Length: 129
Image: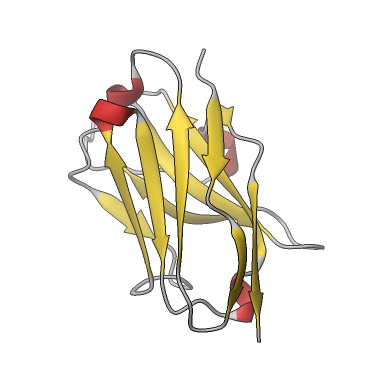
């Protein structure tokens, strides 16, 4: 069982930055693919970014590419989302997720909600214009 807890959300002006953190419990953190999703009011939860267990591979959605960076520190069981050049449309609850599946293709990073096994409760990010 893996427990995830997000932190670092808040209110920021457009063009500003925030760094989200997600602390994970358990001894198998380094084997899990980790991801960030977000959900704005009235919208479906959407993929933001994912990173492989060793941190060597990552991917992000087109809407955040070049602005958001996902990283991880396996020694601290923590995954991060550095968000720069924030826009009002980035306003959402941001969720951390973990996928415990071991894929034959080590570079594969899923982006579907159903592919992730564990979820945090989310942290609110609000970007004012």
